[in-house]
Every structure is written in structure tokens, then in C-alpha cells.
Length: 389
Image (tube, rainbow, N blue to C red; front, side, top):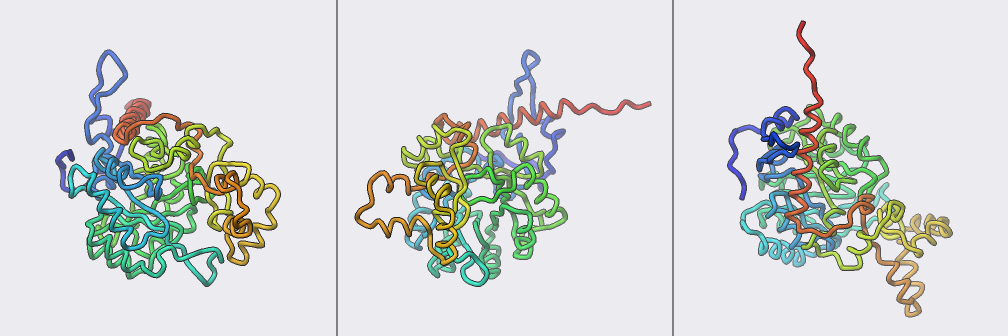
């Protein structure tokens, strides 16, 4: 249940303020946590208890997991590739069916790559010309947040969302994309470091977040008037990384890989096992699946492309051909089960190396937030006031 707010305007998040919300036992270093120990401007804007957003991971997440994250006090987000209007309606209806509070907030994430012009020749309109209809469905659904990845929507779409009271967030992997977001009128920017799974850049999270936060200083949302919020993604898997993200300048976190092992996740067992068994060197960024860098679990098929077929990758993508699709079409009926299995990418971030325990979404959110509060409080204890002379 969402706790009542105690002030009209969102407070700035500081270690000092957090420390005052924690009651420590004299016998231990373990704090007793309040429900709003990590209140930020983002939690107020989204009307959520905790600054934890579920990454829109298509089937790997799904409506059941999105609802579970919202029920746990975070923000559940559904997202995918190639949603038709009917599919999106069904996904949203299913999500709402799992919500304890039918009016609780949730988000929708769509891939919107630029097509034509100077864009990658392999880019494809995943909405198939139905973006305006999809946006109408999102508006009618009562969603709280719309997220775009690998590209931005036309400005009129953002204006429609804002008119309906829906916040807009764009995903970026490089500081150079910040200005484009600001010009469009974003309310939030999700900066994903190269450690993240799926489509991602190569700038490390610890460098990307403060860089983006600095570029957003003094910039405000045209809808809310609040500062443009920075959401951290890439390598966020436990309380320490949540605390680090907040100290780097983020106001919330966007978490994907950790939730693939949630009890409510829609990820197939093979995908979950690929995450659970992954080591530190077991994933790689490759363009063979979509034409743009995608972080996935390594396998012999991918390794062969990356080691022995680099020239072929360049030739195919330069013509707008997706390498894996080219392979499957060429093999036709002669394709074997092993190749077919290896040609199915298991998206995951670097965090897969340290994510190996299945838990409920509620337990994951509680752990992320509770441990983050502990680490921030511990850091706050290191601050020593300069003695007065």
C-alpha cells in the first residue's frame, strides 16, 4: 500500500535526510527501514514507493512481472518489439488483471529506431506505421510512463503524451544524445551503461550517469516543471549498485537482468538458466541479431560470427541485411536444431555473472531498496563535520 505523502513538494535526496529516517538498534549496525527511506523526485512524479523501475524486456519480463514490481512499490514496465495494437491492448489488460490496485502506475516501452536518412540501414519500423494508434492505446490505458528506446518519437507524440498527463522517458547510451532528448521535451532520461543487457552502448555506467546528470542540470520538464530526472541502468543488481547510482546523480534505477530470475518473469527456463549459469566472460555485444549492438549470452554460433565472419557482418549490414536472418534463410530446411537454438539470443547484462538466485519480485525490490538504504547510511556515517575553532 502506498504511504501518504507528507509534503507538497518533492524533497531533494540526501544522505543526511536518509539517515534521519533510519532507526538503528543499539545492539547492531542493522537499521530498521521506513517505507519511504528512498524517496526521490522520481518516486513522487511516478507516485511509487521505491525508485526501482522494471526494464521493458519483452517476453523476458511480461505483464505478470510488471504488475508484481508495481505491487512491490516500484514501477512495472512492459515493452517489446513488434507490438500490434491488439497485442498491446492484451498485454496491458493482462498487467492490470494482476494489479492489487487497479489504478496503480505502470509504464510501456517501445523500440522506435529512426528509419531512412543517415540511420543504420538495418533499422526497421517495429510499429509498422502504427505508432499513433499505439500511443492512443497507451493514453487510454492510463499508463503513467512511456519509454522509447533506440530512437525517439516525433515531437507531436510527446505533446500528446504530456497533454494526457503521461511522463516521457528516452533511453540513451551516450552523453551526446542528451540534447536531442531535451529538445524533444523529455521528463526523464534513462542512461544505460555498456554493462547493460540488450541494446546498449559501450560507455561504462560509472562514467555515463554523472556525465548525463551534469548535462541535465538546470533543465526542467515542460509538463511538470520538475528537473529532468536521470534514471540509471546497466549493472544494477543489488543494494550497493542502487546506492551507487543514486550517489552518481540518478534519481531511480532501471533494472533488467536481476528480474529475469524473478518468480513472475516470463523468460523461458532456458533464458533463466543462461543467466543463472553465466560467468564474467559469458556475454558479448554483437550486431548479428538486429544490426545494432546487443548484449547477449555467448555461444559457439555467435563466437563463429564474431571471430571468423566479421567481414561478412559488415557486408550484410551495409546492405541492410540482418546477419542471422540471412543465415537462416540460406540454410532453409537444412537448418539443424543446434543452429536454431544458438540463433536465439538470450539478452542479459554483465550483472548476469552475479545474479543466480530466484526470488519473488517483492523480495528483489525489498532487497534492492533495503540494502541500498543500509549502504547510503553507512556512507553518511563517514561524514565528519569540520571542528569549529
